[in-house]
Length: 241
Image (cartoon, rainbow, N blue to C red; front, top):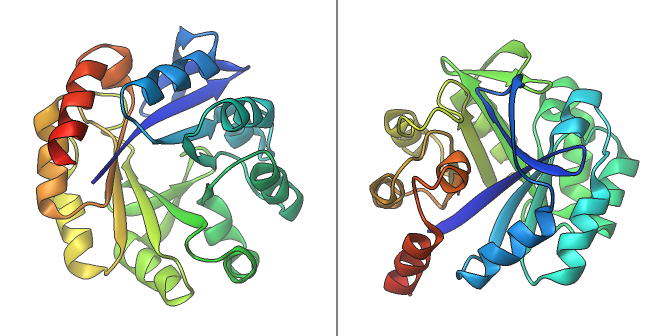
């Protein structure tokens, strides 16, 4: 299972939010590139880079951060946040993204989303399924929809989606454990490569996500608040090799 640190960007800085609320912003680094290099030095090979300014404004903004990390490290970068136009998708890939994460457009403009799947491939576009009480939320988690999680995933899988990042909004940034039951239920009802996100606070959380069959685990605040150390991550990666 892949361990995938999240680097969330506001105004070029590495930050974390709680439950997606921008007013809870806490700055952890003014240099995301140095943070990314530190992750790589501890055996991490994948990161989840989120343009929070982009998510709020519905257009790509922090692509220069993506460009910098992609050109100066060997990390595989999944980039998301505000990608709502063909131009922005092209900018993300041209700036060095290995994959992109798309959420809101899959709800608001499904035909556009499906055209991107056809153009770039299901192995390049991750479906972002941000969920609250089993219903999908979009536009920076502000708007709750009537799309139920299982139907949303299975419909998009039928259109070519291979990967899903599922974030339980109520767990995100709270350090109180992932939504194991939700992920088990998704894996039971949907044949998909699932990446769990939100709530991870200790190595045993990562181990349990692996045991239930998750393809990857996104970790954020637990790293920045040193609930999980990079040395522990490195030991885990070496042990699983």
